[in-house]
Image (cartoon, rainbow, N blue to C red; front, side, top):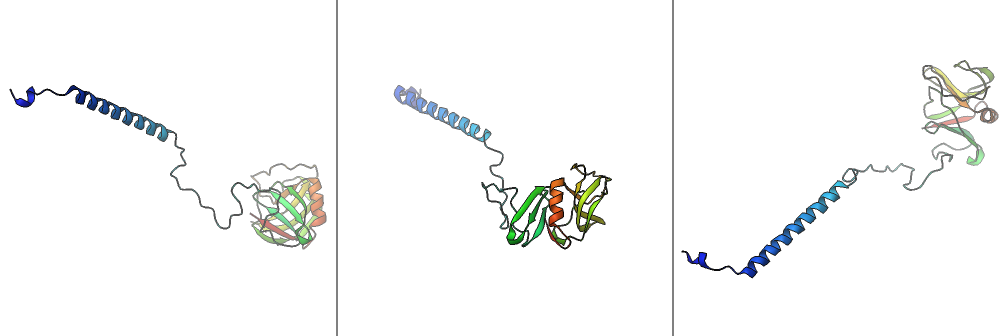
Length: 193
């Protein structure tokens, strides 16, 4: 027989190498399991591009803005400010002092953002939707439709019928009365997005 075959293997070195191999296998299994657990609990947003804040953004992360606050880019002096996105109106007096702010129900045709002046007013008429209205203050025209603020005589402010082209921005009767007193012919109206 071969000499190497007849040699005896040291039992201590054999058992310690088996022990180290067992520990290595257990460690690799534990690391693999932990890696799997970690990858299964990663949020979907990790690794995706985050939107970048624009330099013109007025929103500061973590800081809530007052929804009643006058929009920063709404002009100066005495004016009516209408914010399309928030459906809110501000009556602004001299020295940029807000005299009143309130929510409105938009019409089906919006005015384009920009500066306007009150061009006509009507005390009481029937609106293009057939509803009796009062304190009509017109200031713009879009797509052949006259646009203005008004209040329904019955005090209602329902959502407009989207099947009709209407330009009546509805206010409550109290807000309509305040608008009527404030927005005389020639009063500036600023429409912001």
